[in-house]
Length: 245
Image (tube, rainbow, N blue to C red; front, side, top):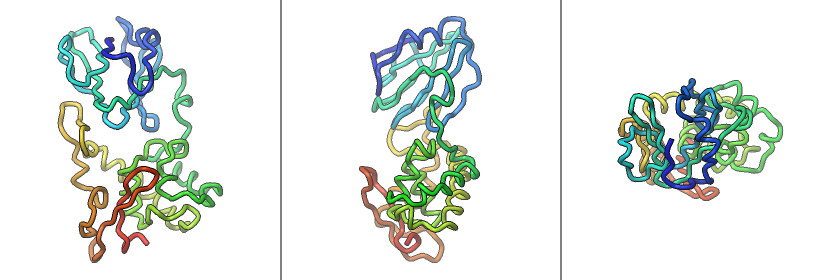
């Protein structure tokens, strides 16, 4: 394991990371917990956040690519680079999965329904978009997919949680898991720097119905609405004022 800077979002715990990825260690099955990737060896596990722009790409080590901050070296001579132009990711040694996140899994409709049925959630004065993106409640739903899910459910991102109807919460729990599954199958959304393992762009940005479509016609059949944009909690939101009252 090689580090090419002292930190990303947080300083590297180099001693622990070098122990977990020490020479002779074998990778065990990786897992996703909320928005983080868990890498495991017999020596322990690490929660890796990709942040806004992180990705894993084949490395040409000892030649270090631009924005290559961590390199994992393998016995067969190959290497894997962690690339992060914005340096908002992190590598954090952890002891248990519960230490990473106790939030609901957005790929599980029943888990989502439990969150949406909680009285505190339904009485909240927060916007439904901000609530969907709260990583302590739902682990892994970001800005793009929260907006795309709200469009598919016919709910305005600006509506407060207590104004969302029970049947609309049911609809959100129904549309979020297949939306994310479809996005995963398409390789995610390439907005700026994101790339897949071999450098390809994701494909789901071609399927966005509202995200980044300011003043474009609504794509819902029979709708004459025009996509609008506003800023919520420092993040852009897009919606159709006709489809999403």
